Length: 252
Image (cartoon, rainbow, N blue to C red; front, side):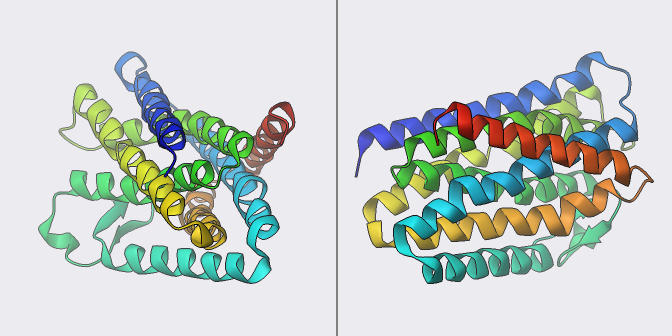
């Protein structure tokens, strides 16, 4: 196991948490953010995640272990996220309640769990990226996911603040809390693939499948529910271009 890779994944996980908190800070100083702005920012995040899934996970995984292991990983990743989405109690501001036993949990914590589910694939993807040894691709992935964590943190904090009885300080902490899971998942990803090298293409496919599921099942539908689908689509395209630019600049 490479201590250097684990250290890089740790720093990347801390970067993800920091940038998520940076986005959440807006709730302390800005009175409100329009739904249109939130939809555009989530569209941007979606574009980053879609592109990163291919440039930093799927294609490198195929180059390393062939098509079949990556396809198996994608299938497993999307399946696990489907099961988690059906079982884990959570709530989306527009979609509503999902999962088992939601009636017994405060709405605020349901929102936290929804955002935590979104962040799990991101932290795992960064850890797997570094564990694979593809440092330049992992750096591009970490930077890109960190950048899209800013609008995600913004969206989560204002979603929480819109709920009755939630203060700005509480909304900020809720957003930060939902992103903390990215650090241990990043470490889990890098340690797992470092210990078991043959699992790397499967793990890269798994992380990509989980991220693509979250984008398609949750993020894009939410950006299209308030009549801002065209602007959200432009945001997605900008996110895609940003991720591609990072790939080129970092020599991937």
